[in-house]
Image (cartoon, rainbow, N blue to C red):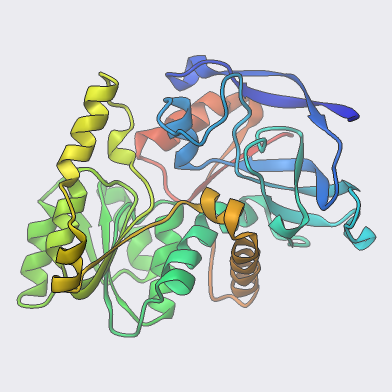
Amino acid sequence: MEKIDTKGIVLKAYGKAEMAFEQKTIQIQKPKANEVLIDVEAFGLNYADVMARNNLYKEAPALPAVLGYEVVGIIEEIGENVSPELLGKRVVAFTRFGGYAKKAITQDYAISLIESMPAEEALALSTQFVTAYYMAVYLSPVHEGDKVLIHAAAGGVGTALIQLCKWKKAFVYAKIGDESKEALVKELGADVVVNYNKSDYQSTILSHLKEQRLDVTFNPIAGSTFKKDWGLIGSGGKVILFGGSERSGKKWGILSSLNFVRKMGIVIPIGLMMRSKNVLGVNMLKIADNKPEVLSHCLKEVVELTNKGILKPQVGAKFNVNEISAAHALLESGKSTGKISVFWD
């Protein structure tokens, strides 16, 4: 099959951001049936990229690899069975890796038209806002009056979750680790802000709840936080796990992985039934692979909600492709807020 030369940011080695990437010419295949080729304006970063760089994300391709889950750009070529009307349209799109490139291929269902929406806003809508929408609206809808805990509340998914949960009229506990992020989460509607570096977040929330318990926790950290969240939810409550950032940056390979799992403890299915508690796992790559229509639906919904002014994507930092290592380091540091975007020009 005919191939196309393009520029790409290649993950050449695992480890620290400043040593991991190389910009070089790569080859990609021309679009096949139901695929489109996008001339990329900008791509977004997600914490899964950091996990992949640290060799902690088993879904990632083998080295050398081009990471990246979302792009904004112009459709410049289409495969068979794709509407010709899409040619020349500006879109935000999911990519199953390959997003860190000047030209990217994706399925025609994985796009949404955005017209003149700024790229840094549109990029927040794809992986992060779609993940939030899938969890809080599609998979397990948040209801009016629910008491919700959002971990990493100032991040990309966190800021989306705050907005969606407040749209659903829930009561939101926003967990942060830096007081500089407090103003942002309050502005988005958080009812109570908990700084885990100032106090134990479980004790703080239990004190506030008194005899009540949480209905939902949205947890991208896992590890030791799972047990704490489990103690915070009540009957009908749900712990929704969508990441394992507590494992990131740890050494000793398999020992660290086993310790990470050990901290989470064991959940016995009959116990879930007897206590009417729930654990839900979310991996959006699996949804993309096996439920593409769900991914497409969620993407179109968040774009529409943004166009209506109900959602407001939070722009974090903007980098040039030559600053990819700095962009990764910022995301990994935990000091960023909102969406980190990387531009080709």
